[in-house]
Amino acid sequence: MAGGDLRVPDQDLVAKAQRSDAEAFGELYERHRERVYRIAYRFVHNKADALDLCQEVFVRAYQSLPNFQRKAKFTTWLTRIANNACVDFCRLAKLRRAGELDEEGVKEDLRRPGVRPSPKPSEGLEREEIREAVDAAIEELSPDHRAVFVLHSVEGLTYEEIATTVGCPIGTVMSRLHYARKHLQGILSWVKQDENDEAVSE
Image (cartoon, rainbow, N blue to C red; front, side):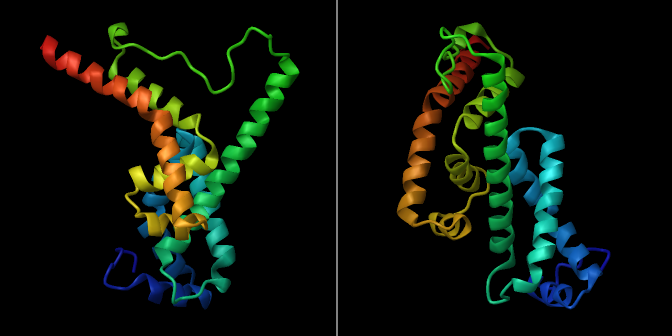
């Protein structure tokens, strides 16, 4: 099994893992760790935190494995655990940042939280700065809105799959995704315009 034999279905590995087969769970980890890490990174935009979250997800999965119903899809179940871990992390991080701001004594003339000046294509930011600007815009989303955006736009999950993963109605998923896209519309349209300007200049 060390070679990552994908001919063995996830559900068979889960059944073995539930019987305390550490090698079977290790194979599940090898198969799905990259996807879990990718989801975590899109939430936190930090490699160290994403790696910690990835480990946390599989610890939670291992602890919850006895309660896993094998009629469910393992990847959906694991994605739900990943989503919950990432949302928890983001909420705690937000509370920590709020506490730090309170301790420092924020001046009244600071701009409202969540509002960033809109960059302009004429500023000629490099690709790395553009990526950082997009990541910053995503970070301004609430954990719940960030979850549906990441799962749909990054992982390609359908509305139905997201609803199952985050545990809310499809209508709520659609509403959150619409809000997230609207929030990101300004920064993303700017990036597109910047790319068009570069193409013209070439």
